[in-house]
Image 1 (cartoon, rainbow, N blue to C red):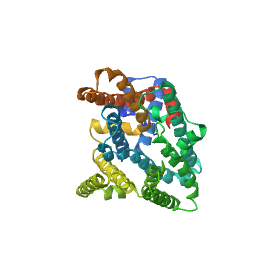
Image 2: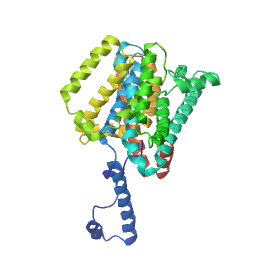
Image 3: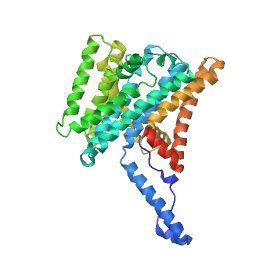
Image 4: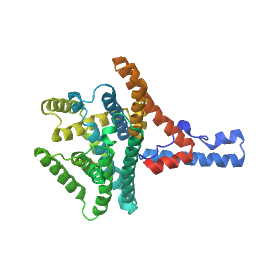
Length: 372
């Protein structure tokens, strides 16, 4: 969730020195423009290290998440339809793990303890964000999230955060935080034991599977194990992954088989893994083909770059919409208007933040300190 690079339309200055000479600007002004152009080139260089198709994938997940939460707020909180969207939450932690190995591992050898320290800090920040958000929700008494922030003893609160066996608002961020923190430690160990991530992944997946067979509530374990699986998959070079996902027909047939299986057996843990891998593969494949074309794709990429902020933003927007539209009832017109408004406002909030960070250095520092 690093700051996106400054877009070309936002950059200041000119393309070459001949254009500047024609305007006969003063040396002082030329120096300012040179620095501006240099900053823009640095930003573009940083952006080039990102994989647009992965940002597209995260942005698409944000939009599906809006659909998921909108259904909770304006349609129904229960129903068999949700098993077809159950891949969503574990997909976020899977792609987090994937990026850890795709990005962090490649930088680690030359950076010393900087990368493990950064992962550890990001994990602690996420836990802090969840804690602050839960306090805020309990303070303002948000409808629909009250059951997740009920008064508990200190022991019950610690147990809820550590295990996930009790409800916590914004709970998806907790196992993501633990994944970042554990990965920081494993990254150091990986210098001596190269397969430590794969071994840890196998242990967590096996544990989650065996406990499900016993009918034991595993809390965060299942979703966390899928995050570790993402780390293992992230060892595969991105070029090879692109090659493996070239077969459209194979992906479509596999997804249809998954839908049939989940209809018969519900979203059991093995099918959750299959659903996450297939759903992300299809979305990523679409991103590879369309990430550089079209306004919709660019919006999805921007949402992916601000996925954490967008996740929090859309919850706030849905709360405002439910309170402001409640007096109109729950008809299809109201529900449809709420969905359109939530999607539009979520996108708008991200675009406003993106532009504001470019223009306001102070805001950029605050954003980086909290979300970076």
